[in-house]
Image (cartoon, rainbow, N blue to C red; front, side, top):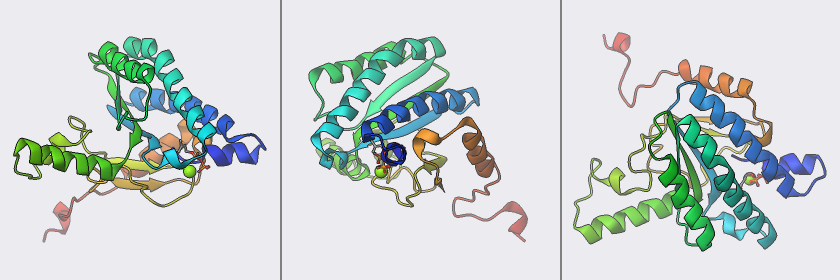
Length: 221
Ligand code: IPE
Ligand code: MG
């Protein structure tokens, strides 16, 4: 979800207004995603590197996150959406950690879909921690066992990864998990992303020929 700061800057507003608007986009897009029968939506909200931002921006993002958790749970329970948070949680206060646990406890039986928010998440940190868990438990690392040690355990690998805001890079997102994901880079700033944009992205995805390193049936002659 990139481009909140630029959205605000274009309007001569402080960056926090862009982040606020970005939260509204989460609601809009998450609703559309689950309405269309997609079962898993994973959002990169705050990276392990985002702590480098100015203290007031970081604290603004932390309080937006806590507010989101506090407000959204009843609706998610009603809609049957599981709210799961992954990331280190080390830099979060006790209250926010409790909100994370409560959100999952209250929503975990939902069957409509899973919304995973990556907060203080880094793909490298995830892999390194998983390797250490394997070593500590004496598990031989294999492609079968390893994903179960990542923080995304239980989630399927993403079919498509969408980055808004025009940059064409991965920025330490789900590094192991996106080995075969389709990548979609949109110039639209996250707060501007609409239902129509989402449908455009999904129709590009629907036309994609995914071979996972193989060849198409009809090319096999
Ligand atoms: C993404 O928007 C939101 C977070 C990283 C929390 P940015 O804040 O990176 O927005 P730009 O890139 O400055 O426009
Ligand atoms: Mg950015």
